[in-house]
Structure formats: structure tokens, C-alpha cells
Length: 322
Image (cartoon, rainbow, N blue to C red):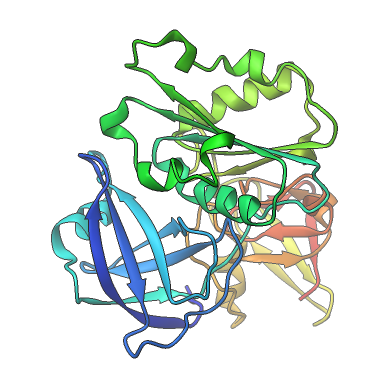
């Protein structure tokens, strides 16, 4: 496995947002600007215990003096969220990756509909702030269990966002604060683009409602925190990678990923999440000849790009521009 270049940041501030969510503000140790990014971007955070996780940047770009991420303590986590909650303190230094963005705002959209479930609010909050700053047309729908479980509440209720915010509280008594997903997505007004991030069940409910209303695939953009539990992102039939620029072929075994097969012949492909979520391993190639198993590429992007950590060939060969 190869990793992209890392940079070191200082944990400037930790603030509790909900009983389960902490916000971490990260800055350059010497006060320098951090690398620029666009709303929807995420970073890899390398934390104590050898864990590495992806976290969305929860604030619109503004001078890049610091980054803000939100980390939910997951009861069934493999250790990443526990490490951030229990072992990271203000003043600590952490290695992170430069920001990457596989979940950008679409410039062609005339309206942006942002649907956030729980901690999935983080990239959509940054998007909403960026859209408000440029006077764009958008709606931000936030789904949370209760007021107590609403992260970044102050930012959500800032004057620039408040007119665009619709809040759905599962435990709220006010029926007007409930949002019916199927009714919300029943009609697509104009060139509206839909962005969604949140727990798996929420993501699937949004996808089902959008499919029932026949939303175009390229108008639906999703950011996953984890691959769906029924996703098969590794094994399959053996095939051959044809590297067009090198003029060589590399066999990929049934129980092997394309990334691992390339690594065996000395070709390093950067990887991070290894679940097809983050886009680190995406390369140009014959996307129409690929069996795509990623969750980061749009339908259009899949025609010419392939996520190598999980995708396989539809037939016996997959051509890559490597």
C-alpha cells in the first residue's frame, strides 16, 4: 500500500457538539496556511494506534487558516473514532493528507438540494456555507434524532444559512419539523442536483426515493462513510489488466485486487480507504469495460475512470491508461 504525502497539523481546539460527536479544529503548527480545498472535500487523519480514517471538512474554505472535522464516537467502530475521542488532546500533532474532493458542488446546477443525516452533515454544512457566500439557490435538509443530537447547531442557525435550513427531528413534537423524503423528491425542479451524506439506512432511503421519482443518476451525488454491508469490493473472477502506456499485461487473481496485482510488479497506486469511497486510487481507463464497485464516481465518470482498489473487469481484460 502507498500513501499520498502527509502534512502535520496541530489540534488547535476540541469542542463537544453532541453526546457522541466532537469537533476538531486543525491548524498548521507554525501558523502557515493549510492547502486549499473546495466544499465537499475530505482528509485522511492518521491517529494514535495506527488508525487512518477519512473525515469531511465541515467548514467552507476561508483563508485556509485551519480545518474543522466532526468525529462521531461509533459503538461498533474498528478503533478510529475511539482513538480520536479518547487519545487525542488539544495541542497534539497529527499527520493528515492533503484534502481530496470526490463530492464537489456541481457548477451546472440551478438549485442544490442538500440532505444530511446525523454526522453526514459535515460536508454538506461546508457546501451550504459556500453556496450562501456566493448567493446560490439551495436548500439544506438536516435529519437528526433530537436537538441534543444536532451537531454544529450554531453554524446551522447562522443568519446566512437559517433561511435555507429545514430541520427534521425524529424526537420532535412539532409535526411541521418532519420531512417526507418521497414527497420532497417526488418532483425534480429544473436542473436541481441532490447531494446526500449520512448513515447507510438514510442513504438508501434517499436513493430509493430518488429512484422512485426517476431522478437522473448524474444529478444524485453521495458521500459514503463506509461501504454498504452487502458490498463486495474485492473478490471475483480472475482477469488481466492491460496497461496501455507501458504496453504490458498484469494478471489479477480471483482473490486479489487490481492495486495488489500492480504492486506485485512494482507499480504503486496510492490507496487510502480501500473500499471505493475516497477516490485516491482512481485512474483513467476503459470504464465501460470495468465492473465498477466504487461509491465515489458518477455514472459519467465511470465511462473513463476506474477505482482500482475494488473494481474488476466485466470480461477477461481491463484497459488502463497506465
